[in-house]
Image 1 (cartoon, rainbow, N blue to C red):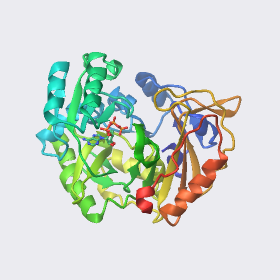
Image 2: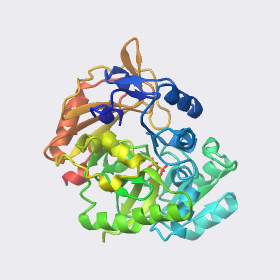
Image 3: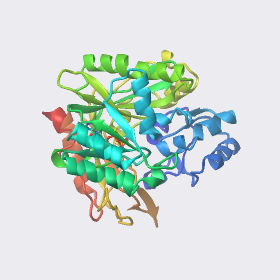
Image 4: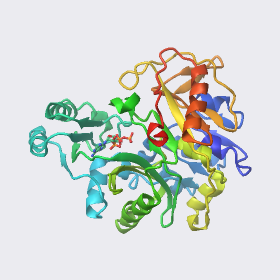
Length: 411
Ligand code: ATP
């Protein structure tokens, strides 16, 4: 987002908090070492920041938007209350049920015995989700009853995600397994008006062929052919608009990016897997490479409630991004490996950084997902080739990446 915003002639200076090795290397960006919400607000006032946009979920859940707004600062994102659509799965499932928004059937549990009984009643496959933020790693899609019971014990008895919960005790959502193909449907909302971004598809599993554990996302491309014009219209009519209207009705008007993770069945019927209150990673990289419109105009219109006056322009070419992850990701990512072979940005190929930092001027790994190599080309297949050509030249010890990102679209 910082890369895209900095291309606007209206952005005289772009600060990134806290930033990473990639934003540190970009001469148009400057990192600031602050993550505390109050300290950020004070810094924004002192430095007369014209517009703030929130990338990840943690500051939203910590109330950064409430804090900025209370002091008259312009910021784009949902309030703490509205961000519960992402930060609490129990909240978002109850919200969807209340407003008739299609999603998997479910129930919420704090008692292990009741959760185990529900698992036995529903049978496998079945999905167990920790309530709270777990960076995409709090979900177990259990193919057998044994896996499901183990997941319940892991989350409720051992409370392995205890720190992620916002109201004390451990809580899980257990839901029906949905079949189909996933897509990411991301829109901007200014409280009333909604503008959809280009569609995309993420690859959640660690390994080729969608095998291995769930991750925060190993690669993505845009547009997603599974979102036909008909599916798009249904997603807007049945999911996005009822969500925005429902939030308004509940007295928590929604502003910000809204990301609906969709499961689209064979007949083209979309159901909501989850909401995120931000753009997705790694969907953002291919989507923003395709966005031709000025990002500062877009975000400014969103903050001012004027999204109805915006007409987004897209590059017709597809874009594709492949995540290079650290050794040991997702369970136990190793930090501190030096990264070499990074190419200069080109118009049609950019290596976006995630978990990196500079050490003596050299980028090193600092987290699970390290880089996202992203390219635009005339077809998904050509974008894939371009990305893998670049990725082969980039090195860090133990790097892991999938070799099949975009395979559904290519097929
Ligand atoms: P993230 O925020 O990283 O997308 P999350 O922890 O909020 O992840 P979900 O999106 O709810 O978790 O689930 C993660 C993945 O698990 C989904 O992308 C999907 O592949 C699978 N999944 C979740 N719910 C279901 C379901 N009901 N049926 C089938 N698969 C599911």
